[in-house]
Image (cartoon, rainbow, N blue to C red; front, side, top):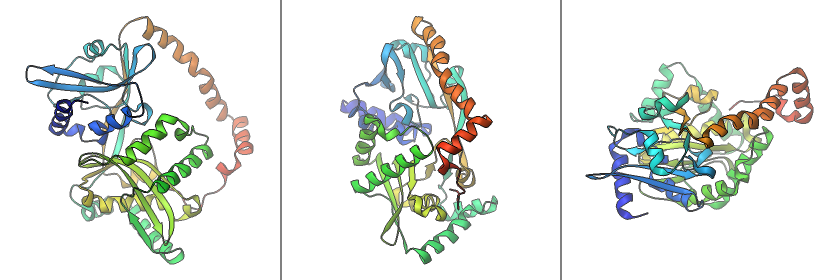
Length: 353
C-alpha cells in the first residue's frame, strides 16, 4: 500500500473516535491481505486529498464483504465523523453489486437504511483506571470481581502462584490456544474456525504483527508452571479487543478465563489501553463485567440487479435444511438424540464461566 494512503488512513482514523477499534487500523487490513488474494481498498478523493477509504473483500459475482468476513467484529468506512456519502454510489465506484455487513458502527448513519438488525458490543471502560472500574462495578451490585478474587486465592492454594503475561511471542502458546479453542468448538458442535486455512494463517500473521498503533496480543495465565488460560486479541492505541479466549478444561472450576480477563483489565493502562471491547455475544460474565456498549448493525447494501434478486430467492432455500435441523434439535426427539450423541454436553458443570 502506498505510504501516502497509509498516512491518510491513520490521519482519518485519528480524527474519528468511532474508528478507534483495531479492526479499523491499516495494520489489520494489511495482515489479512497478506494471506488472502481478494482484499481491496477503495480510496475516495476530494479536492483536499483522501476523504475516505473502504477496505473490503471481493467475492464471487462481485458480492463484497468487510475485510476478515466472519472474524471482523467492527466494520465501516474510514472517514471523518462529518463525512457524508451515499452507500449505493460507493458500491458503484467499487464495482460491487452488494456489500454485506454484520458489525457496522451505527455512528455511520449512512448505513442505517440498509440495516436489518442491531446489536451491542459490551465494553469495559477503563478510562478512569482499573480501581475506579472495580469500585463502579461494586456500586452497580455485581459480585463477579469479588468471586474472582476468591477463586484466585483458591487456585494459588491448590495449584500454585498465579502469573499473568500480557503478551507472549511464543508460538507454542498460540498453538495451545488454537488446540483448546478447537476442542471447545467441536465439543459444542460448532464449526472449527481454525480448520479454515486462511483464517488460521491470519491469526498467525496477526500474532506476528507488532506496530505502534496495532498488533496481536497473546495473553497467558499460569498457575505455578501450568498454563491454564490463553487469550488472543487485537489492540489499537487505546482499545484491546477481546477475541479468542480459552482455557484448560481441567481447571474450569476456577473460572480461569474470567480471571485472565480481569488480569488483562488490570494491566490495560500499561498497554496504553482505555477500553476492552468484549465483542458481541451473550455471556453472563460479559453482562456482569461490562460498564458500557457500542451499537452495531447488520444488513446489506444492495444494487437492484439480477444477482441480488437471485440471492434473495436462493438464500432461504439454501438455509432451509439448517433451520429444519435447528427446529428438530429443540423437539423432544431431538433433545433425546443430542443427549445420546453428545452426552458430555449435558454433564453437570462444577463452575460456569
